[in-house]
Each structure stands twice: as structure tokens, then as C-alpha cells.
Amino acid sequence: MSVFQKYRWRLLIALGALLSGLAYVFLIEGFLAITKPVQSDVLVIESWFPENLAVLDAAEVIRQGNYRHILCVALDEPSSRGSSGLPVAERTARRLIGLGTDPQIIRVLNIPFENSKRTYTLAAAARDWLKKELPETRAINLFSINVHARKSHILFLKAFPPDYTIGIIASKIPPYPYSRWWLSPKGIYVTVRNTFGYLYAVGFFPPSSTQPVQAARWSR
Image (cartoon, rainbow, N blue to C red; front, side, top):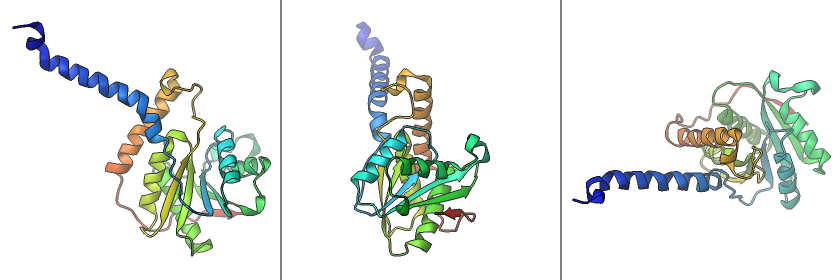
């Protein structure tokens, strides 16, 4: 009996694991950072990254689209206010205005902080705002940061009624310092965390609820 025949199953399992690992390394970023917009004049921006370069991408998306309503939405975590004392959604809106976005089309939605189900809480708050302010709207695009996009898309779909069409746009600028996620500890952390976040959103997140979230503070 040859060495291959003796250990063929172990070798095949090892080869399969190696190929699966390589596929994950090279394909996962493109899978998570999904961009699939729909026809809509409403853009909802997950706005927890006011100082991130992704705001540049958001401003470019606004310039290229025919949007009449921009909703900057984020949890108002006191520790994230920084030296300005402003909520992150407000700071994101101000950066967008500074980058050329018409302030007349921007609305800011500051949501009381929740330590769990944060993305779903954003989605539910955006849903409640749209029902009140734009009741005829049945299609929106969601802008999210790179590898967080697919998870956000799933949770927005769960939060909104089935008669809504929701597109997704991922920022092109990744939230880590190198062009390949596996080249930095932050890239590894962010990508692996969002992989598990996506799997949880798909397979284990509780059934959707249309109950309103805590009263959000709307401005502008």
C-alpha cells in the first residue's frame, strides 16, 4: 500500500481545508462588502463613522445619485461624542455638507444607545422615521461601511415590512490600513467579526418585529 493510499483521506481533508481557507481569504471581502443599489430617491446612511474616509464615498454616492432625501442615522453613544460634544450622526451630516451635499436634503436621526442589536435598532428607527415622514416611500438605498454592508442589509430587510425594496451600497474604502484585510490585525478583526455577524444575522437573529424602537431624536 502506497503512502497516498494509506493517508489519502487525511490528505484530501487537509487539501479541502486549505482550499476553503484560501477561498475565504480571497473572496470574503467582496462577499461582505456588497453593493446592489435599487432605484430610489432616499439614501439611509449608517453614520457611526464621521471621521472615517468612508464619508468620502458616501458623498460621492450622493453626488452620483438623484437623491432627494438623505437620512444620517446612528446610535447616540455619549462616549463617542468626542471633543465636539456632537452625536456621530450629526458629525457625519456636517462632514457631508462640507463635502458639498445640499443641507436641505439631509435629516439626522440620533437614536438612544443600545448595547445589543445595534444595527437592527438603527434599521427599526429608520423604518419608523420613513413611515412618519415619507409614508409613500417603498424603496430605499442603504449605505454601510465596507465589510459591514451585507450584515446591515440582512438586518434592514428583517426590520422593514416585506413591501419595501432595500438596496445596499458598501463603501469602497475599507476600515483598515492596508488594501488586503489579512495584512493587519484590525483587518483580521473587522473581517472575521463581520463574518460571524453576518452568519448570526442570517441564521440566529430573532424573527422580525415591527414594534417601534425607543423614541429617536430627529433633527434638521
